[in-house]
Image 1 (cartoon, rainbow, N blue to C red):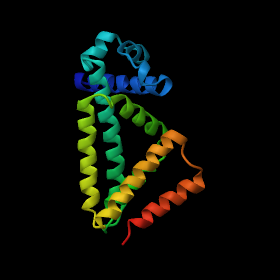
Image 2 (image 1 turned 120 degrees about the horizontal axis):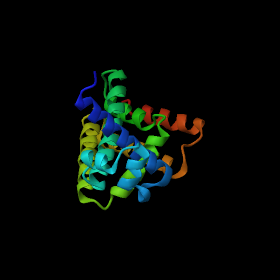
Image 3 (image 1 turned 90 degrees about the vertical axis):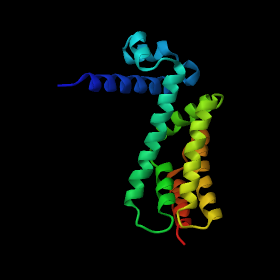
Image 4 (image 1 turned 135 degrees about the horizontal axis):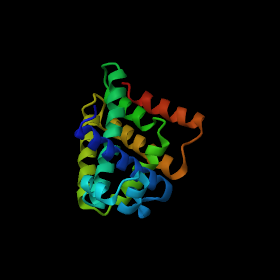
Length: 182
């Protein structure tokens, strides 16, 4: 039998899914609490119980997006052999994962949050962690930084210009992975 906590988590997940749906369909400029509540089929009061403001909802969306990306990195990391470049290979594979909708949603969120100092600070902290992990991955520091920056540039370019054709995508992935080996 579901508990109140289970029900609350399900409602929260439903609201976040509805917010993501609104962002994908209409962009962040149309993300309002009313629209999210209506899309989720939940009263605005129910939404406000979970997210006191639009900023709180967007903060939760950003956390969900970043946690999902971290989950991909962790999954790929476990699959990589213990050798220099292991974390970077996981980062590259997570970046190149076939999740174009999440990619677009992530960028729309990051762009819309760019004017919020608290959100910028949160993203900066995560990227400082990524920098530290890349630099501790057993590769020369400049190479590790170039690899991570190239993976990030792929992510940005994929959102702006679309994912390259499969031949180019595969070649880019292979080349970045090759660079992670000494």
